[in-house]
Amino acid sequence: MRTLSIIILSFLLSASPTLAHRGRLDTFGCHNNRKAGIYECHKGQLSGRSFASKAEMQRTLRSPNEPPKPAVPPSAPSPTIQADLSDCEHLKYGAPSEGPDLLCRLGYALSHDADLKVADWVIYHLTRRRVAGRFPRIDHFRPDPDLDKKNRAALNDYKKSGYDRGHMAPAGAMKWSSRAMSESFLLSNIVPQVGAGFNRGIWRVLEERVRKWTTERGELYIITGPIFEGPTKTIGKNNVAVPSHFFKIIFDPIQVEVIAFVMPNRRLETNNLPKHITSVDAIEGRTGFDFLSEIEDGIETMIERTKQPGLW
Image (cartoon, rainbow, N blue to C red; front, side):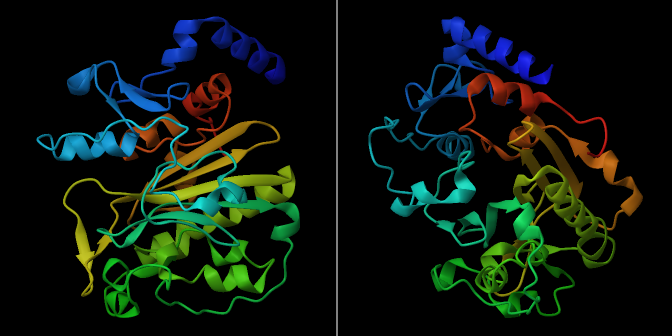
């Protein structure tokens, strides 16, 4: 029945030039016009304007007096994305944003924010076979050598900070390869997290659930990252930003389903995990990112608006 609904919705969208062109508007009153390769705004304070990307629009909101860069057509090469990312398996369903530090590792891909010194988002593709890996965890936290020293976190930033070094792509999902395990400890994949009750509590439990769901479903794509709302606290000499919240989006490409979570970065009751379920649309509104952008528009709209009623 789900497959039939998807086919009908897809047909209706493709048959309507208005819907196919406009798509849904996000919380900014804008949308990605994939046909033109631009990000257009139809409502709100930026109504009538177009941008090269949602990130460009957000920069304009932060600096309204700065003239926007011209929108770049899809045929033009982007100077902000590394050329080899077209073959990155973790980005099969799209990169949520573009930036100067987009990196593809064996076990995950990420976009790194040079100002905040943490990842904007991290994506990893997990399969049943990978979950069954047996390589042991070997803690080797270290700065990311692919990032400029002035733009990255260092080990001393976390020392006596009161925060755990929280994995975005967890070491527990990297047991299928010694290299993947090692690269999961690069500090570009690490974000300050409250320890007891969060990183060592509800967050760990959710990561374990993801691996269990992968074993049951066959494969999943997981997108994880920080959210910054309100005044931003920093730690260490390099001013590593401490998120107010974290999000996690789990996409099942086989059953075409999504479950998403947002949790505040504080001690939480593990049993309350279902209370933190949300929709992808809600996370896009809070982050400005465009998730799962390479899925056919009609299907993307349907699954991103869905809020699962409970845990899978």
